[in-house]
Image 1 (cartoon, helix red, strand yellow):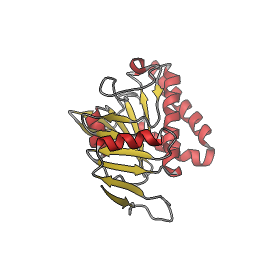
Image 2: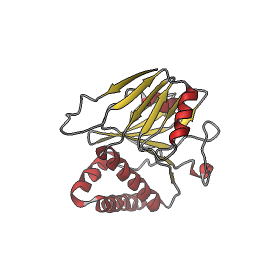
Image 3: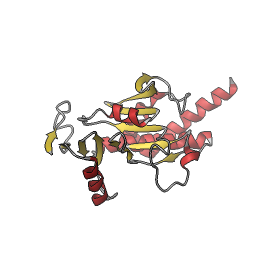
Image 4: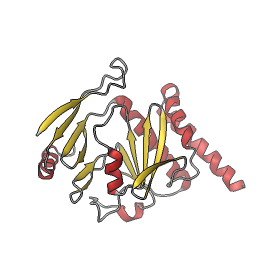
Length: 225
């Protein structure tokens, strides 16, 4: 089993003091499962596994804050629409038959919330994958997570990076960049990074309240038309 360290050269060290990403090659599925069982759920690091390659990375503050805010925005959307969602954070999504596994920064069951409501464990492919997964990228991944998520059948992927939110939809087994969310078609995706940036000056909860008011205005305008 070979181990290598990945350091992202795209981000200056003085801006992002990131710990290294650990990549292990030649990791059998049984070894991966034993490792996950031994460390349990209390760990801080995140994993991605693709056919024998295991990547371990430690989330950063710069990484965590956007995904927390995006989670709050989705909760606000659900409240204003009066719908149920189930947010499951870094839910381990795995398929032994595909020898692939990944933990998103956060994920949501929206359209399929009623199918997994109250379930203590979710097992693919018997259960559906999350309707939306979120990746907040401040360091590069050595693995193609798009390929992993696509193989698991995740229909929608939100990627926040460099103060930009990109949304991808799964089309015939591949992700295509889109300007409209499947889960929330009316949502002005291009405005979300602005609310995240506002939180740096007005605070997180104020940014969420501003976002909520924006959604109320959109819904009110739609109902008048």
